[in-house]
Length: 365
Image 1 (cartoon, rainbow, N blue to C red):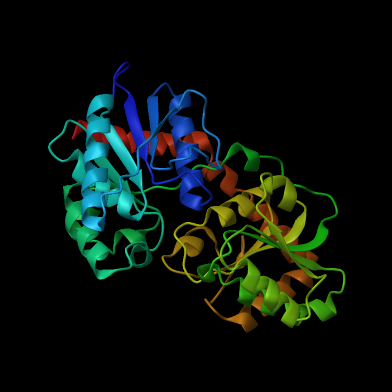
Image 2 (cartoon, one colour; image 1 turned 90 degrees about the vertical axis):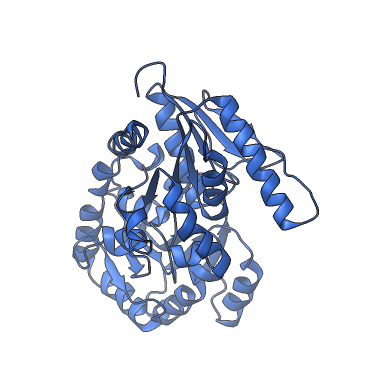
């Protein structure tokens, strides 16, 4: 795209807490810094968001129609989005997540705006119903581009989608691009993420409860909020881990909160490319992750070199991985130092350049 023509819109349902919301915010701000005219389109009616944007990114909040039925509401949303995109005269609309991707493809059909959909989680979960899966597999053929975070996610779709797709990472936020902490670490095991069943925090608590008697100074801190908070609080009490396991809630300064911890753990049953894991690695923590679909953790972790991988749902394996690191300070240091190298790979400059190159390719046809 030549100077004066660099107009791009990003589209997601909301900018409230979530990995995709954080990634799209970082991308929009990065494109703005490179001279693009950037619009962020959401359907968040109250205008509240969790992630900051570059001040020159123009926010557009679409009205939420109430037509009395799902089909009529879906049609109205697509119509509103279509009118908005045509008015903005953007060359490309980049959409993130589930139904937003479906709406974006339909809204840009037979317009001058090209559509790039981005799948952020395991496709089988992001399009979990038969209807959504069918719509995605059909409609993504009509998008001019598609972005996935892993090859496994890309290969979920037909060759017609795969041949025009790219596997692209998300840029790190600047908060996580800092020198690795080298002082005495706090005796803490930490995790960051929504409190949701798919994150399997109960397995993490069970594994910690098993190692806790042998490491009486250590605590587990869980950062994040969500609909399983009360259930987890009850589970912590039942496990006798009150005073050792803490639900810290949402945190606006995650990097500061976790950078001096000993171990970061991702215990999810399924993920796309987990931002929390990438950020912990960038900070240089020794990281343990489940080897969950759709392949995000195994894409970035070389087991035993820059982190440890354990099978999904395997409490004993997670316990063993924790003990392995806690019993071996040299291993903890080596894993953390090697993990921090991901800062270069996921620097905003490098990742944004990859996105810009792909978008330019799509716009050029």
